[in-house]
Image (cartoon, each protein chain N blue to C red):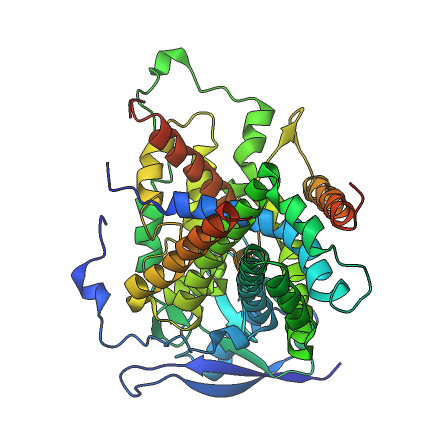
Length: 139
Length: 247
Length: 117
């Protein structure tokens, strides 16, 4: 068959279960997946904070000080804490899944997933340490 | 161990009802029985009208896929004793139209599978006199995992995107396309790229990963799809940056 | 030859955005979102921050940081809306809001970084 015969498209007696809007609550794996996808919101949230920080920087020291005060408010601390949790969730799930897309063969044998994920984690730690060092006045 | 276990089996008889219902059956709980044995017991001794698919009863034909307690399983490989004290809910494979009882309509899968051309595609066949296509063990290794697919469609039942998006080609079809793309004897990668690169072909996949969890043969279709996304992306950039490359 | 989609390009943006976000955002959000405001570590002063950001290399990194993660969000959130809320029929609106948002964010980032005093 080159294409679905017309009669099979809308056969009246077949029962088609409609997928619920809440399909993602139906099982734990679906829910975890949805949380992982929602981490994109925390990524966007960080960029918004970054843009606000750059704007404060451009406007001058008073604006920047105001921005820093704003970050100290309980609401922002709470949002940042939640945001950090989800961003970390993004990082960990990202590094754990990246090996699936890359099949690297060394001398005919497939490199195990851990060996591809591990360098990512190491790079993450090194880069994070470097950034922290620069910001904490190490330069 | 108890003597019996309850099976809650989905029934759907379109000539007498408009919606699926559930019917409970008490079946013997034998330690070596699988769900398929229980269904066969029901059909042989209780209600001969129960309809379902099965064949090899040993996990190689891919016929007996159903939802057991909400998870896609081969009923010939799912032991009753795993679910004591029960009850065990047996439903038709998810995300497919239900024809009758536990039988689903799988034309959609068959069409999508055929569309990826799951066979060796050659520009030119070697004449018989030149003998067979030789392949090193490492070349076999490159696609072997994806060749283990038995077309049981458990991955389709696990994939929410397949349920939500009628255009998504689905895990098994993409894994089988990869199986042929990675085969050293095949020359059809570009041909398959056209089909798979279409807007809905593979790009609906959001890497839920449930297909790999459901697969009874360890095919890892999720891995195949991500690998293919990477390949398709590389091809896109090659075509974009070097449009003079002949197709 | 059928019509080939441009999804691969968007997926490439999503992937690279994901990598940038995974590597850089945790430490920055930890420092600026928690450690500095709560006083666990001393925040860099306005002057030293300015000196750091002025450097062309920093500006480049920050531009990438403003841009790619937003495209990562745009792509992922688009599919979250398609599948989560089943509103795929509104795909034109969703695409404009998501990728449009990412483009606006990128433009804002570029503008601000260009105008660092």
